[in-house]
Image 1 (spheres, one colour):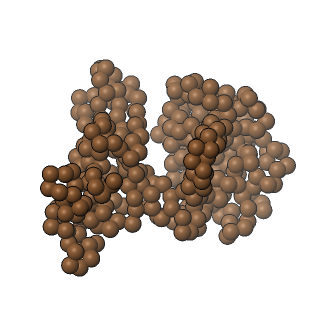
Image 2 (tube, rainbow, N blue to C red):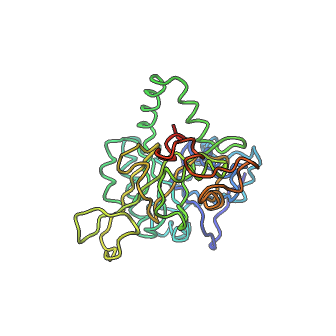
Image 3 (cartoon, rainbow, N blue to C red):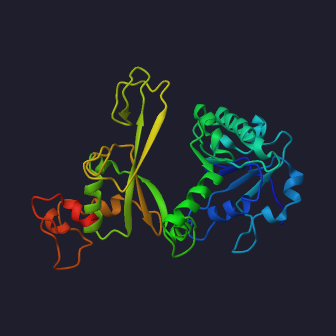
Length: 326
């Protein structure tokens, strides 16, 4: 298949920096059948000869892949060159993936960090995901704006250990990490403004009442450290900070505990996000707003709950969401 240069008018696309054996699998997931809004993908090569000599790294024409949304950019200087990033329309990209250069081996992380710094200069708002070879280098990335760092070796080690502790857990992870028809995926969705101030416990109750086609598994609490204060405050709740020299912080809370902070009864902020498992991406407001205050359109006829306590099977003195979850 002949690869083509990206057009100059690309927007909301994904830029992959460096070629490696991961390219064809990443493109396959981004362009899977169940992905409704398939993004354009630009591969920015670090070595054209390396790409040509490894056809197994190329996206496969199988499974309906035509190359219509896939572009290859080969320029001297590779991904660390600002001009090449501009040619890839990085300023209009929605995400950037930095793969480890297989030629560099143990020095790959240093090279990837240089690419990350070049990305930041061109587009500090692009969501950057970086592959890390050595977990000891994670600390060096704290000064950068890389959004997510994926250390494959570190994940593999933990998954191997968990598979020994809980046999079969590997299959669970595999089932939610592929985009295939009939499989569930993990989605992180924004909290609708109408539900700001609600709690995880309340969202669970609403999901049950509306018979929502998803399972809420936790939430992400976004916060920041204002430059003029030593106290951390939830994002979206501070009107006094100018936003200068503010480093965002995220806390992931899966299966929140009772009487914990953050926990099941922690009020959710306007920039917090909800983690859920579903067959496809959903809008929370389509299901959770209709369950407000008792019965919902999703309840079977004749079985409308008359109170939150009855909906959860709990007595009036019990928290409504506790028995549902347990």
